[in-house]
Image 1 (cartoon, one colour):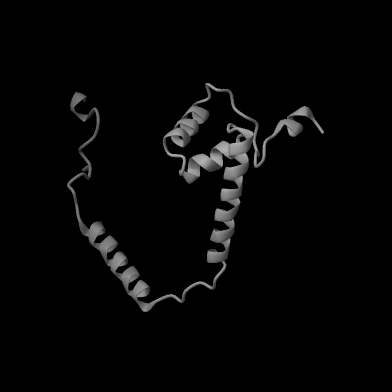
Image 2 (spheres, helix red, strand yellow):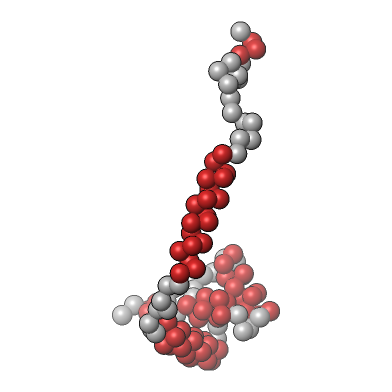
Length: 118
């Protein structure tokens, strides 16, 4: 194993960016201002910018959150309703109405750039 692999923290998937990196500044600031931000937590753990203790705590939270999302998402999908089919017909009608509208932007045969200079 390389030295980089042994230095990685719990949950780290990517190399730690330098302190001046724009992404790191954004996510660390977000995490400091809103420690409950899931987006900031996941980024900070994945890139190893948190302390070992914080990374371990947050990594556990992330795993619980992902496990809960999988269990909710694994249920059978709800049957499609009839309302959805009728709304798609309305959308088609709206598109047809938009096509009939003329904004007066069409260029005629004698209109164009540079015609007046001839």
